[in-house]
Image 1: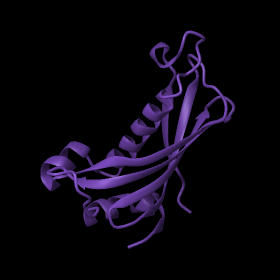
Image 2: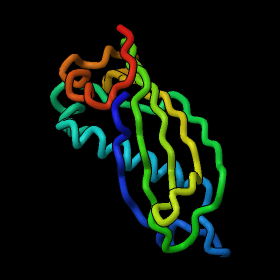
Image 3: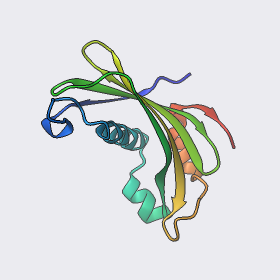
Length: 142
């Protein structure tokens, strides 16, 4: 099994509610940033994917399990793993942890769909993108 991709971030004031606890929807932002960095690290720039290939990734489904709260100034680690890649979709699991003690704060299960920008219909994930992501893939379906 490949090691998860690691993305580090911090909880800023803007991420929290009045009690200094991370607002639940912001975990989705942390996860999105981590997914962007997986692509970037693999040499895939989403803007270029759109401009050169006419496709983009869109979230098809997401399920978040909130386990413990993150608080203002916490350093966080988002560990992301691509579990499966099919023709037009990719499934992943992301775990948000507090860096100081490794406590698991949230688990994000996500399915991404590759879509054609013209019309928004499903599209096969380009072979070059599959190859670039291969170091993060645990299981592949064709």
